[in-house]
Length: 288
Image (cartoon, rainbow, N blue to C red; front, side, top):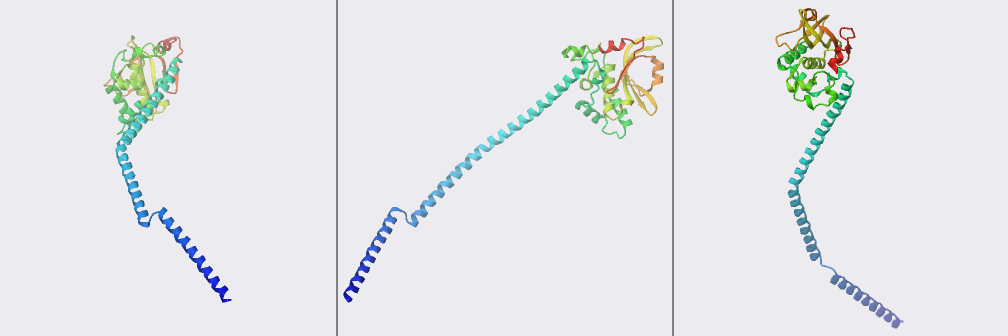
């Protein structure tokens, strides 16, 4: 019995020794294949150094490219501004097409350009200190008769306009914007500008109009003329913008002095053509 017990114990010891040997051998082999903790730590530190170097290189590249980015952003801004300006120019050209289409219809109302930014800006400038519509009317009249030089026919763009525009009238009629920019015009030009600016300032269409006709003095024909009439209260007045010393003139007084023959009148909403035998064809002369 003891013999077998001893043999069993010896067997267990041998198995344990063999197992320990193989375990130690595997550990040794694993250590040989890998790194120690010190080595692994050193390796990780080397990786950190490489990453920091990469970060430094990237930051250097970023600092080098930032001016280029800012320059490119400025270019993009300039391009966007150019596109905006071109779109604005395109809109103006499209509006010009609409004007020319109306001109071919021989309708003078198209010349009262209430939405023109140049004219609106001038109205704002001229009336900046005014509080009432009457004060605005007076300021606009003062501006037109004193700042717009009266000239006989002839202007810097006469021959550059499309033929339908030139056929619209027997002489050249300027748009309000052009009269402001050129600071000159004849009787119909200043009348059209005056009517347009007053309409923008708040004068209703029922109270202002441009009148066309021929005027006489003591029976003698002075020639074709255009002037502006406006209503204040119950009284109609004439604005003779070609006279720098004239203020409002009562219509009855003006008509008694010049005894005009009326061809017609218009504003941005109405267009009236006299059809009497005396004036037959006269309006067409002005508008063709």
